[in-house]
Image 1 (cartoon, rainbow, N blue to C red):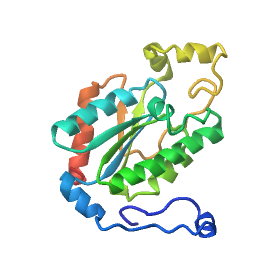
Image 2 (cartoon, rainbow, N blue to C red):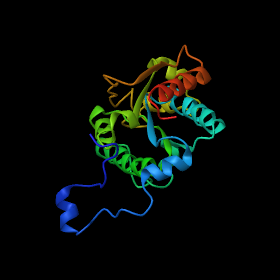
Image 3 (cartoon, rainbow, N blue to C red):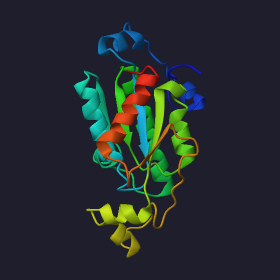
Image 4 (cartoon, rainbow, N blue to C red):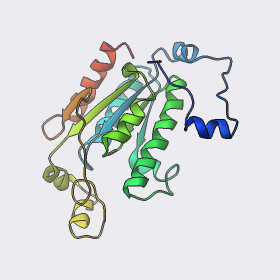
Length: 211
């Protein structure tokens, strides 16, 4: 498998529209040398309020302190712009993850560590994103947390609204969540400190030679 698969969309669409991937004069290796680390994706998946964003931002801070170029893509933030036209149906959720995958592919090509915190409830959608990268450049982090604990943490009141039927298709209540079968790391956020969990991810990235 190549380190990073170039191009997006289906072959038929690309050929129909006469689209060609243009290679510039600066390679991914050149950009990674400038950053001093490899480009990679750290993909957090888990229920709403399971701790994904909290740990992701602690990870970003730890990487920043090491001089790494890293950026957190948070589910709510992305839906403010790139995916603001999408709802929460199964098809829209899949399209949301597809767009994010293509976006992070470009960031990895730029030599950046893309930290993604999305519920991303369906295995098939996560696998499609993973398929854009080699295994050593895509780390799936499962923030495991019981739904009742997530509901107690939920300062937005989303779980209450979902149980009352105000919010439809809410993952963990009225819509399914498919946990990873073979994640690169499992964080039991109900009993792990967020900073310590971020530290475990740093160790994993060091062991893989990403940083």
